[in-house]
Amino acid sequence: MLKSSLLEIVRTFSKQEMIKFEDFVRSPYFNKKENVLKLFLEIKNYALEFTDENLEKEKIWKKLFPVMAYNYGILKNLIFDLNKLAEQFIIDLYFSKEEFKRNEFLISELLNRGLKKNYLSKDSALNKELNLFPANSGNVVIDDYLSLMSKIYDRKMFYAHMFEHNTTESSLQIGRDSYHISKILILLFGGFSDVEVYSHVRNAEVETNPVTIYLDVISTGLEKIINSLNNTSTQNQIYVRINYLMYLAIRQKTEESYLNFKKMFFENTHLFPTRDMHDMHYCLITAAVKSERRNLNLNREIVEILDSMSEYNVIIERETGKIPVYIFHYYISNSFLLLDSGKIEAFRNKYIDKIEAEHLTNTKNYVDFMLSFIKKDFNEALNFLSLLDINHLGMKIPMRYQKAMCSYETDNYEMFLNENDSLKHFLKNNKFISEDQRSLLSNYFNCTNKLFKLKNNFTEIEFDNLRKDIFEAFRNTNVWFNQKLDELENANLK
Image (cartoon, rainbow, N blue to C red; front, side, top):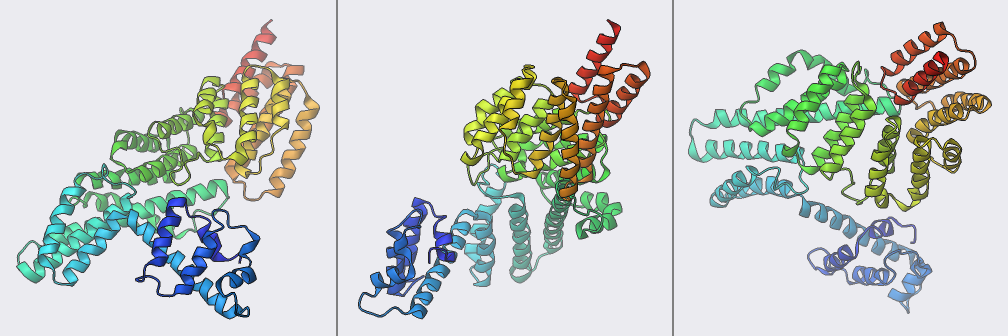
């Protein structure tokens, strides 16, 4: 029983949820079997870890039926019944937090039961509440808001047709269909962002994905469709427009489309519920990574976006109260490429206690490596780097070029060659690494190798060629390479 799905569910309950679940199991509305309640009360004695050997099936049986011989079939049925109650409890917990979904079902049922006065009263109250969205949204997301709005218009249309027989039905139908279309478009645009994310971090195919194909087919008419949504709230039109700009930024990959998306989102961030604001910041990062960036510094853009998430308190995961370790590392890695120790230290001081315990030691060592490197204590930096044991594939990639940087700073060409050989095996054995990431690593190692050669044998021609290579690869946004070029040039002048 220790490995049963029942205990897997119950292990996730907080103390307050355990109290509520006991009330749930005691309720005759949900459970009429006394032995199921006895089973739960016995299990509850071993909260919260539920790893005690007394939870073995035979021992549980003796507690429930001390004079009966062990019967696996009976106990299995009791466990099954309690498991179903636990699943139903999770569903009820979810709906207790989802006010918009409850209201969506409620207004439908009020009319289905012919409760016209109750329906009109609830409809009036909802119209007032929704004027405050997202200030009163709680756990609600834009998708729930759009579902409720389309249901409200649908029920208004039904009520007008059945009981008033007036001429407002056509405008109500346009409103309902506009909200339907808004929801569909936002889901498609968000789905396309996911496609691009997986293409970047898992080398997934973009062009054959159904979302990509669908949007490509309707792309020529998207502007016309979005302009037709004038029977929805101004706020909703802003949501759709921003999501559309997000799609364009990621699909077109131009600097201009990225900046258009960023500008409109940052101007209207206050209109987004917390969960959507969190997700849209991630979409902004995707758009920044995908853009051509002729004049933009990608590292600075990413730090700015994550700073915005910090400002709006959406960088911490709502469910866990923790900051994802890859986001923490993403911030400090991009700050490191800006050689900005102030950003790294401030972020560490603010969020280091929000890291999961299992990642804390590695993260502290990683921060210390970066700060030591920026302070030019390169041997100390290498020491901290050697202590790292990181399993996340995405976080192993920056460590590769950071080791190359350290080998150059310590003038250790043999170490660099070993890292270069190791990189070849790393890329060969990790087929999920995208072409963008492979290109990044290749550019870092090629340019670093040329730095080594120029340090030992400087020529104007090779120096100019390297400057062009670095510009082509990094668009003059890589602070460290630019510093190394300046150092080589100044050393040659002397």
